Picture 1 (cartoon, rainbow, N blue to C red):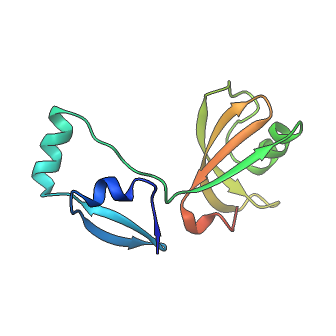
Picture 2 (picture 1 turned 180 degrees about the horizontal axis):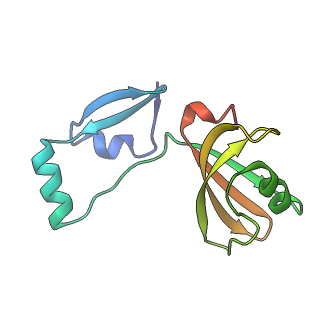
Length: 119
């Protein structure tokens, strides 16, 4: 089973673990109420190492993605992102993703791990 690079740090806290598409991830660290108050009064960390990630890069990347997803990507500034559907040639939804523009010719697509192959 795959584990996050942060696994050893949070394993010391003895969380309840679950299998999520082949990744061993924490489902909780304590009671829902305790976790709620920790977030309300402090801060929280969500480890998303298990997510599917795909880089699309090259001079033609903005035009290519513009034709493949349902949301505007050409106009995104570096550091901006949006949520979009990945479409087939007839406009049917294949998957959903978050698109982040890393630089003028590079985009990061973030998706559920089981959708990576589809995308």
